[in-house]
Length: 528
Image 1 (cartoon, rainbow, N blue to C red):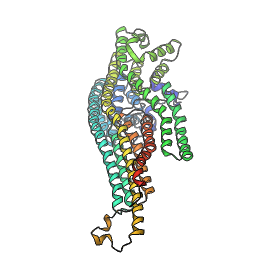
Image 2: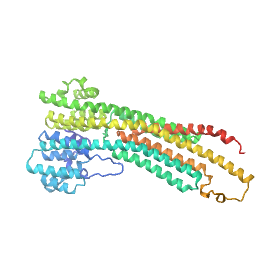
Image 3: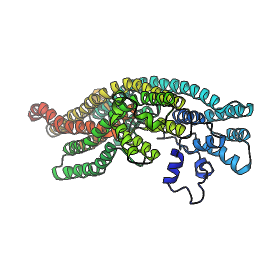
Image 4: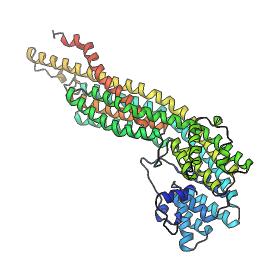
């Protein structure tokens, strides 16, 4: 049984008399769209679909099976294949005209061109497997070029992000100091802070949008033990961190202590996520060799895939050995083969393994050439793994910079706020002394000092509140930006968030007393 039929049966889509054709489900033909926080997955998803179609085409399946199989993959291009299948089954179109009709209304330029090429190939009588293998090679090169282009943009934007954060910090400091000299008003300070926060957030969002789409951990219903532990810790520790932070703030009146407690409590979630992704990366590196070897051995022996698994040296497949042992054990006790392979994919925790193993197993299960299926699926796995290694060179450097940069920026803001507060305290004392002892009718303008340039007393509490708002915003932005650059599971943000929260909390606890001790002598001296 193929994965398509197996999953349809698991979800209850098959009736007792007849299993419905997946491509005829109207919901599968609905094109999904997004802009703000939806990454561009078209190239990666199209490569996955073409790899799958190339693999199952080696089984000499019908055109209807090709389009319905692609429609049920539930990736970005799948609705276009579902629309073609619906036109053929419902309105009597042939596949050539159906591809042309769908291409005319396709909003995606890449899919429009692909469907037109597919229609030409079908009309000319070219073999589907020849066309699909050629398109797969071309799409793999396009995906590689786009990925590397995005990496270059990511490298430049991570450098620009650091400069942007420094500029934001400088703008806030200039506004803070200028408020002592000029009567700027509260509205101006608020506008400066809002612009600074929006600019920092925009920089992190641009990194997220520019970074290549590369899901690491799968989102299947069944999950690996690490995913279950990660979800359990998140359900417990995220609310606990919020509750502990609120209690610490209201009981001890210490925001710094509250942030440190929150950071410590969410840290385990980030650590477990980081360890899971390290295991997934190791498995993704080994899956290409495993599939290529398995396909070659199966074709050479002329046996089934399951029989060939016993003739592969499990020590040569590295990190996949424990999952392979469990796969063989399940099959040995009579578990359905498709169910055992699905469990193998879920236990690895890898989205890449889920994509390539599904292509390989469905092709072999449908009677396709195991050597061809193993080679095509392994090529995709190897290419994605190599590109992911290049991305780490860019993101790892940026990740090491963000936390020290955050400490420097937040520490500078807090320290300068204390300096300004100390200056304001001394200024109030001086103004009070001058008013009581040296009353004069001479205005600052009469002695050549413009009124706008005379030092102004200002609301210290308001300034501290606005600076604190900027620091908290930078804490969130600097937690999100490294995760956006590195990619991976969204819970990875908990790791960087723990670092920035603890750093901000430590700064709020340590810097004000340090600054006050530096200016305590000056503040205690009487005015002469």
